[in-house]
Each structure stands twice: as structure tokens, then as C-alpha cells.
Image (cartoon, rainbow, N blue to C red; front, side):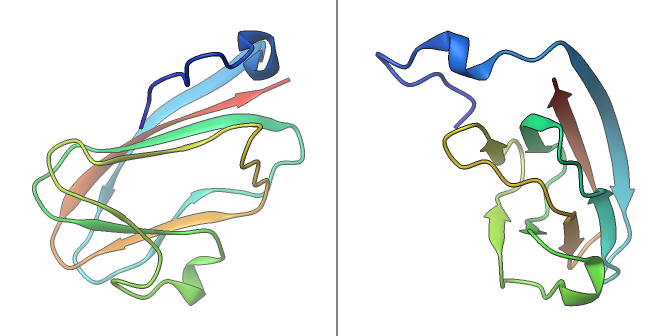
Length: 107
């Protein structure tokens, strides 16, 4: 992922502010990654660890390992763009301690 699609108008993806963070995930313990944000224009999530991470487009109480978007270890990634815009909460869970980096772009 993390690549622009050929022929996609880059003007569609413009944002003026961003937040860049990383969080440490504790084994089998869901964490909220992003709060709901109606101004979200873009987000990217990158698995910096070796263990798979399950990304859930929902509150952390709904996070179940293997039931969501699987970010494979060592660089697995997922993007939220204007083509698949989601502005709700984003949570993550993993079977092992690992680290997730992310960026959120807003208007």
C-alpha cells in the first residue's frame, strides 16, 4: 500500500496538518490508535514489529485478533484515503508485544 495509484489526481489527497506517532502494543490487549475525527483526510498505519497486528475500524472493545485488517510484521501497512475515507475510531491488537507507527492528516 503506501503508494499512489497511477492516474490518481494528487489534489484529492491534500491536507494541511498531520499527527505522527507510534504506540507500543501489549500482547492480547487492545489499544485505541485514533479517536473519531470528522476532519480526517488521510491516515497510514505501519507495523514496525515482527508480530502481526489486527487493525480494527471500531472502538477497542470490539477488537479481536484476526478479525479486521491484518498488518503483517516487519512493515505491513494500511492507508485510509479519500477513496476509502473512514473517520471513526481505529484500534489495534496483537498476540505479542509490538509497535505501530501511524500518521493522521487533517484539513
